[in-house]
Image 1: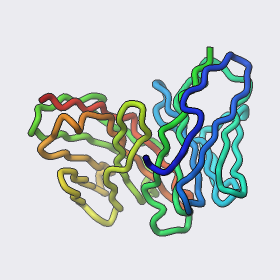
Image 2: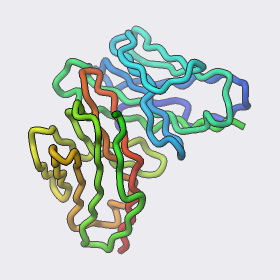
Image 3: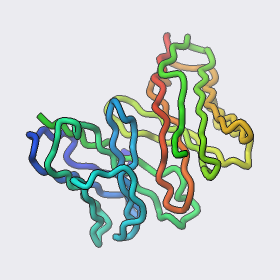
Length: 116
Length: 112
């Protein structure tokens, strides 16, 4: 167990729908990162939050959004889903963007999203 | 500029052999180069990492070699074991935000 908890583990939904993926970071970690892993695009950084604030944005579609709550858990919202959004979505956490041990953060086991 | 190129795509090694995976990057601003190991159904797990001021780092059977002038780095797995069979990703990051740019992955199979 990495200490990063992602729910649900599997999600099957129809095109056009909206889903929410949840991530609880390791205890004490302030930064949360979201990544998408697909067969054709590999592992792609989506977005990072640090202590409730958006810190960095990667290849995240406008249909996707995220937030980090005061208890530091994070949610990734995916809307108007398309078949191509089917992928593994990983959350990772680290102590914080200024913390010297921020390197090598910890990934959760992921949520497998299937859009049908 | 953000790309990290990884090769080979797949690798088959006999037990006890040496597995070598290579990566090349373009962005000289990258300042941290980790390797991740991923088993089916699991998230990537940090294996070993190196900073550009060091040319080699060894942890057990795993060694990173880093060539700053060539903008290349590689993972060597000595005495490869069947339990090492997994997908390996190189990555790079820069800046305080620490988002990772990943290579495309190498599927390693170690035959018993």
